[in-house]
Length: 279
Image (cartoon, rainbow, N blue to C red; front, top):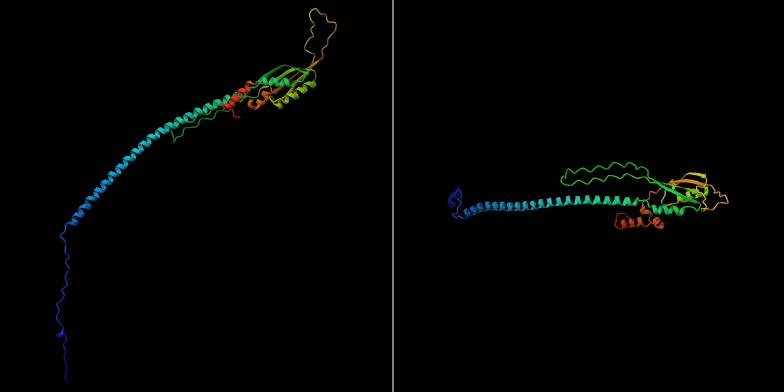
């Protein structure tokens, strides 16, 4: 038997073996990277310096604005203190005006009162004397303490202290004395006085009434001898007490004008025109 020996290695083409080795990176000789690095190195400090100068300029501007605002604040505080002082003076003037108005409002219109009593006197009554008595004033409450200064604002002026309260005057008392033909006339006189707007109705009362001889004497002309005996009737001697009304005079203007009193109403009208007394 025959055998075939075939060697394929002899028929393979010889190839040059690829020699594996490290790749070498070529380095360029251009100076551009150096310039770029140097430029970046110079720009960063320049930017930082420019930013610092800009912030310094901003700080100086803000500091100047702050100083101007502080100076303006000092002026505003001075003006505010002056305004508070003026407000205190205005309040004091208002208090004085109110006190003046209170004085005028508490004046008793005597002319109107006498005219009112005269028109209410019955025909059988003769008033001989009218006496006014003034009770002692009541003690006024202590004045309110002045408010303490604000510790958070020591420069502010303290508020003015409240004015001392005026002692309250009780209403004046009136004593009316006279004579009447009868007790009925006295009772009628008391009832008419209770209707007077210048008197407090509940305080009008008859204190005393006594029957006595007529206090006057009949006189004849000189040289004439009386031929008859004149006997005068007895009369009632009375005394009435009442308190004057505590209504302010500004509420009695119409009654005063009806009683032909013109002085006090004219003054009150002038105070109303000035705004001191509210209508």
